Length: 362
Image (tube, rainbow, N blue to C red; front, side):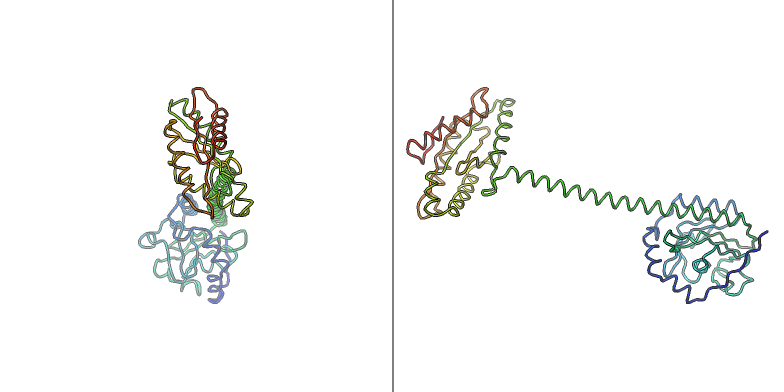
């Protein structure tokens, strides 16, 4: 049998300072184990400790500032087993400052240790506690075995408890690593979401005219191609309007480019107010706009175009009226996007040649 040297009992001030040490408490809380549920990975270790050493009780304690929390208990009955915490001075407090395994064969025969409350309340006599120490040197608590009668702890007993304490620390590190990995994963998910949102915003920006907020020429070409493809499936009518601001150069020359930009923005608002949600309004050139009208035949396109022409003519942005000329075309069988646009553009040219402020159908 091994005779274990008795460590000199630490004074109360040293124990209290260790219990309340901010860095140590931060390490305890960062473990994520305080007030956590029992887990088989820890319970397996305390069962093994009891079975191999013969001690009836084994537990994993975490030392908070004002309580001991038991992550795992084996052999404890009554309230202590259900509450899994204890207040007041405990043997684990002495293990906290011992720096080595604390081995007591009969606490009732030892000064100071016989005064630990659990000696009287639970009948504890023998105690062996291994400090649970982090890589940074912070003691989280103890891996302990307890007997209710005097016990001669063997070298093998203590070596086994030390190995099981190392296993408990591995479980604690693994749990922390998994928690950190989950936090990192959530951060990555959030970052990816932000990247996706940014990419979407950039995509929209690349398809949006910065002056008017309408679709730009690229978005218009894509949309027209998709709508023509849809017509091939549904056999529904499709029409296109191409329009131009009359005498726009005179507006710029007379009132300046800022006024010209204001006219373009205002016309964009008027056009958008004249269409349905399924229609697509785009700025396809300097003062040229186009409107895609799905499920709209030639008569419907003419009505929309006239509504737009009148709305623009009746609006007053400057000291002189501003008007638009519009060319309209409806999709023919097997017609391409280029052909449809060319016919609508030619109708626009005809509207401008014949006096402006009018609608001409292709």
